[in-house]
Structure formats: C-alpha cells, structure tokens
Image (cartoon, rainbow, N blue to C red; front, side, top):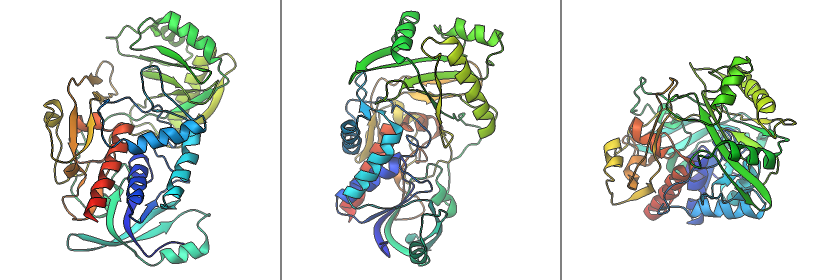
Length: 421
C-alpha cells in the first residue's frame, strides 16, 4: 500500500535514482521512486548504455555499485573485464536485480507514473501529486494518488531536470553547446570467439581493441569513428562498405561495440550517433544499415540479427540546473577539493560532436571531486538533483555524466540526507 508521506521521494528510477533510493532506505528513510517506464535502470536498461565506463580506483560512494555487481554476478549478468572494469552488466538482468534490491530494503516503486503537481511553501517542498499513465496501476492505487503525498526531501533524478522545470527553477543551459545523442542496439547470433580472434589480429592497438575470457565466454571491444586524425584499423573495411553503398559515412560517424555480459553470442553497439537532431525513425534506419554492414563485412557476424533496440535515445547532455554551487571545468582540471564530495573520479572530459574531427577526449591526470552543493537546489531548501542534470558547466558535465559517477551522486546524496534526518 502507498503511504501518504515519505522521508524521500525520487522522481526517476535511473542510475542516480536507484542508487539514492537503495542507500537512503538502508539508512532507515522511507523512500518512494516515481518512474515513467515499466522498469528501473534508466540509461543501462532503457538506453542500453553498457558497459559502465571505468573510473578512478579511489572512487567514493561505491557501495551500491558493488552490491549491484555482486547481485548480477550471482545470476551470471556481470563480469570484470580484462582492464579491471566491473561495469560490464547485462541490461535485462539488471531490471530484475534492481527490482530485487529495492524490494529487499522496502523502497516503494510506482511505475508508469510521473509527478503532476508540487505543493510548496516559500522555499520548501511540501507534497507531490502523481499522475499514473499505465494500465497496471490499478484503481485503488489511482485513488490513493488523488491525494497529495507529503515528503521531507524531493530528488530530481529524471535526467532532464523535469522537476526543476516544473518549479521554474533557474538553469545553466547554453543552447549553443550540445552533444549528439545515440540510439544503441544489440545484435545476437554472433560467433563472438571468431570475431574476437579476427578483430584482435586486424587491430593491434590495445587502447582500441581488446578481448578476454570470463566465466567461459569470450568478450571483446573495438571502435571506429569518421575522424581523420585517428588510425582506425577498421577504416579500410568501412571505406569499402561506403563505396559499396552498404552504409553512409554518416551512419559510421561513431561505431563502438562491446560484448554483453552473461551471453555467448551478443554484442552491444554504442551506435548510431545521431546527427542534425534525428529522431527515432531515422535512428532505426541507421541501425538496420549498420547491422547489415556487420553481417556483410565482419567475421563472425554472418548469422547475426538485431535482438534489441534501445527504448530510449541515449542523451549525453540536456538541462543543467543552477545549484548552490556551480561546478566548473576549472574546478575539475585544478583538482579542487571540497569538504563534502560525493564523487571522486578521473574520467576524461568526453565531448561528442556532430562534426568530423571536432570531438574532444581530454585526459585528466589528477582525480577531481564533485561537491554535495552541486546537487542542492538554489531555489528550494529540500529539493535536490542527481544524475547528468547536476549544477555543472558544459565541459565538466561531460566528464561527470558517466554511470559510475551517477551511482556515486545518488549514494552520496542519500548519505547526506540520512545524516540530516
């Protein structure tokens, strides 16, 4: 049964939201997640953003990440790759494991729902009203939601700062600074062992192409972009495919693949990267052409097929809120320290561009910290944010948007709120 008040309500059950919810509930807070989809996991499950990128060995607020890994490992849905990255997750099993983890700590989850209205008094959030959009939200639950639900704290983990928008909060957006989105997909029926042997022989650059064995399966990764400044081993093959009219140069502007944890024959693609604000229809056309390219030109893909296309386009940057502290690229590059950091990372500044030879991957040679104040609303005392829409400038957000950092944001915020309570 739904309660009429919670210590913490979280809008969005993506990576930051589930981490925040789980940690807060373990600390004794009553927690409700309001999620628009029929499952949790956000970028991992809905957008197929796998694997999670490797970050600093000195990262903080990693308990949730490690518990998720352990739970997935028990089901054969997570591996540690040869570079020590534990973030290789199976997206379908992640849905199941997140359900289990939330249930274990008594987090209430309302699927196919969103916050319709927010009641405030001066600078304080008092309650929210919820709109249910799914057929599985039965009549008695709908009746409960007609009444406002009180909360001590409200967290916007929607990714696009939907709650901050609803409350007309101030944003940092500079519309001239954007990054293209991607619609990821998975192919199955691949002879991964054959492909791995072929690509490892073709490409000797171990910063690009790698392979390892784990739990009896072969896993691999490789990449190609249309940027002329890099010596991609796949370039002659892509050039031939373009000449054959099998794909376009735009289709292959960014092509990256990773095996899927716990599967013997599946590979996930960080592609296609979309150009000129393309939508789902154009993106799926590109997916089909890229999949046919793989079947025709890559060893081991002869009997492969598209097994999954992401439900949601993967967004790299969208709305960024103005918090109590606006984190800057100068803070990041100078390794500025803070009294209450929620993230410690060394992930590079990763800015994708729609234009050839215009993307940025700026390595960071010292660890940097993100302060809790960048997760605090500047407008409301008990409103917070976690995920890619934090209070950070464009360049620093490009380093902080990765899944492990979002996990850490959610966990660190939950610990902060539990201490307040």
